[in-house]
Image 1 (cartoon, rainbow, N blue to C red):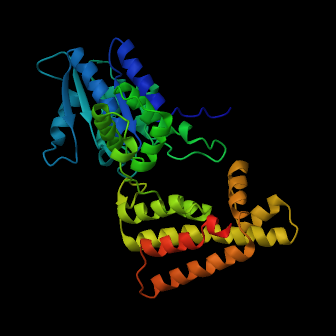
Image 2: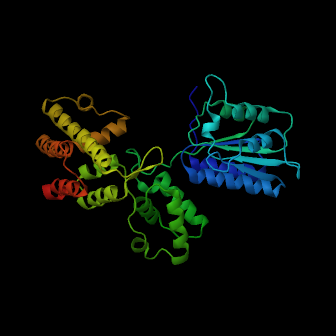
Image 3: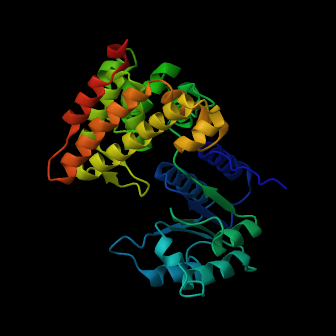
Length: 370
């Protein structure tokens, strides 16, 4: 049986909010995982509001807070409020408290498993932990009793090769949805610009939408400056696509603002940016050389892609081959020589920065070739 695909973060949030509005009570346990904190905060706010409407006490705990008291958390889960019949316990940043001790569940997980399966259904708990896995014991126990388990990954911020329209990207759809909720009249093209200019930072995007709700969108391109720093591999693709104006802006933004890594921390270290960008550029350039050599030998496309080290879905492979075929083998080889020179400079103590890659971009722009 095929595995059921997971809904998008936006769809999961809407379904959860609808569940809260239509249900008589709160889910006994709600588990929030994944790296996108905007969705976590929105879900917690919805639960807290619903709990207060129902007359619950609300106690929030955060192990990362200097004033955190574990005894208070355990007391809340074992007992209840002295002043009301029910209590909502919210635990933020609970990852460390949920880790196993050897082969044993942590004390908190053991208590929570008893809590969600106990006869006393008074109260509810929300557990927020970004790195929690879907197969964690708490997630399984929550699902088994009909609780809520939501996975809020980062929204996809670039179109897939098989669906190239940027207006249908998850991040752009989220921007349009939030703009509508906030009363901002935003065109699809404006949403695409905001996603490109501000990057995949939902808090920054929401802040900008709040400003636009006041100022309007007539001068959006002037009022919203370019702030996003794309990933090194995205910037590498833009450079090798040969469209100099887009590529130069991407290079300057990367070196000025860095990019957000998988751990949600912003990478700003110059040597790290240079190393990753050079590596991404060399990989694609070598693929171009491999495709050119394979085609000169009369090999079919599939075999040429395999020799060049191009893998992935058929559409991804097709997109990579199209880029690799956009230049001659001689051009790719000359580009590789330039990149090897940059790499050698870096490894022998030289300093590389945005200027070096802007010059590389301008040298190999497609307009110049034409």
